[in-house]
Length: 119
Image (cartoon, rainbow, N blue to C red; front, side):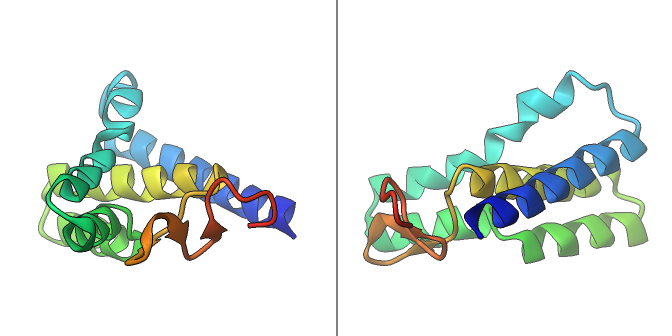
C-alpha cells in the first residue's frame, strides 16, 4: 500500500510540473522555488505549536489549490505560481514520507511517524 501511495504522490508531483509548464515561467525557477515552502519550518524556532501551524499552512494542498484558482480567476500569475509550488512541494514531501504535522512533534505526521520503518 505504501508503494501505491507514493506512486499517487508522484503522479500529483508530475501534475504540478505540468501545471508549472502551463504558466510560462522559465524552467530553472521550478527547482529553485520548490523548496521555499519549507520556510514554514521556521515556526519551530518559536515553539512547537507555531511550528505545526506554519508548516501545515505551507504544506496544505487545499490551500495550494485555492491559491492557484484565485490567481487564475483574478489573473494573478504569481499567485498561481505559489499555488503550483506549494502543491508540488507537498506531493514531493509525501513521496518521502513527510506529511502534515501533529502537535506532538515534528516527526509525527498524518502519514505516520517519520523515521519509523512501519510508518
